[in-house]
Image 1 (tube, rainbow, N blue to C red):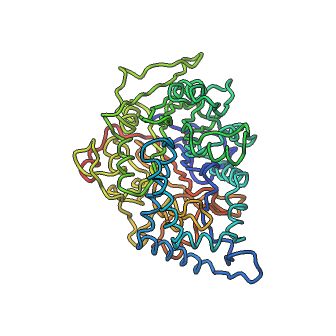
Image 2 (cartoon, one colour):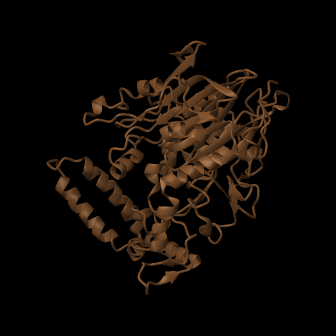
Image 3 (cartoon, one colour):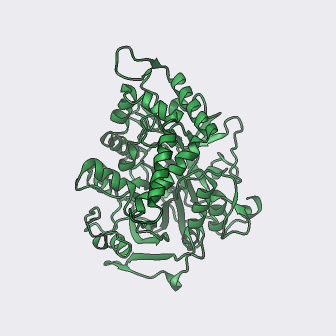
Amino acid sequence: MVKFPKLLGNRSPNRKMNKSNATSIRLLQWNILADGLGEDGFLATEFSPIFESADAESKSYAANDFMKMVREAKLADTASGMTSKFSKLKGEEKKLKKMKTSAEGYLELKESVAKLKEETNKSELVKLKNKFRNSPQLEKVDREILDWSKRFDRIKQIVLQADPDVITFQEIDHVQQFLVDKDFSAKYTCMVDSSKTYKPPNYTENKGNDDLSPDKYFQHILNSRAAFAPKSYSNAYLFRSKRDGKASDIDDDGCAIFWKKEILKPVELGFLRVPSDTEKSEAVLALTLQHLETDMTLNVITTHLPSGDEPKKELERLAVLNNPSARWTARRICFDDTSWKEVPYENNADFVGITSYVKYFAQRKDTQTIFALDANSRPSFPPIKAASSSSETNVWGTILRDTGLESIWVQSSYLKITGEPIYSQKPFVVSVNKMRGPSSNQPSKIGEHQLELIDHVFTNGTKSKIVTSVALNNKELVPTAPLLYKSKEGEAELNLYPSSNMPSDHLPVVVDISLETHTHVSLLHFTQL
């Protein structure tokens, strides 16, 4: 077996590579929470007691009591049907925004939206929002925790100390900042062609001239020579534009892969474009790296699936994993010892979704394949019948079945292959623990406690070892995924993310993956799922 440098524990950034003891590669998988999406009232209770306002006679609440208020307001709105009205209002506002004022039904829809707004203003969550509108402690969360400059420094510190060989990011909307940062760029890059300089896309008044317009998207991301798959016309770009004006570094968020320059070099960069009937585009990112000392190759694929906890959202996710009826396109560039050139996939590979794209790499001989993603779906999500499936399934089961890869959560004995937790005493195995509070601009999401495992890494490596924390300055231990909890109440509510300690609403996944690979697809997936 060809071997990589052995990477275990919190390693020194200046360690010397030793070919003789090489057995694994360290991956850091992390949704870092886009700058453009970060300031939306994420709740933290570390600044307590929590006052309603800065007035001297303002009422204050201990963290436990405050969380109880949020929980009870959420339950009351759910029981009264108010949360459903919020969803309906959101949908009708979207329709109204797209309609012309002269269109048939416009006035009726406008009246309906106005009525729904009046009704939802009576929501217990809206009352809570108004009650704490001027809370100094909640304002401090925005200032001290959610501010991007503070989060970037913290993200960089954690990554550098974790010392991964490969990094997969989701929701990164500051690619340029990472590439020009002196400390980070000394070790890592996402540019396959070092002679190129990354620049954010150019958007104009005429969308046909935009760098990431539908007909230019593919060529632009290939020409950028960056292992970065942006979401064009993203909310992250929109919100930052409104906040920061015409700042030159405003970018879309997307998925990126960085690698350690001293041991790895890129040899292939590819993208699978997700079918879309709108102006927006996004793609799955695939990068093949070669170890400079051993010539072994490593395929790394990453993506970010649609969010939402409703069954219809799981169907959306399943539709991008496998949908033979949609039009899928994939393009790649390869290095031929002198330059990067576009090369069609072998035999015009017919991809029918993300899992078929991942499987294409997993079936390559003598290579390691890693699929790291924010799936936005927990392993225990109730199975549902998708259009492309003959039986009920979910995202977890579909990836295991269709790719032949194994989950690091199963390999490291946190989950059974069915997605059930190994430790019944602490059934909540999580990579996210977040909640939006009264300062959120989305009242329907206030009090919605997301405590679940949605960040995943799948591999054809035979074993993996989770790094359970990252030590900073020999004083502070930063937690990594997964964390285990007994319930949603109590300890989990009082340790929400983002926080001063954790700069994202997702925990990073840090894992050492064996480079010894399975020689065949195990039938275990098909018999136990």
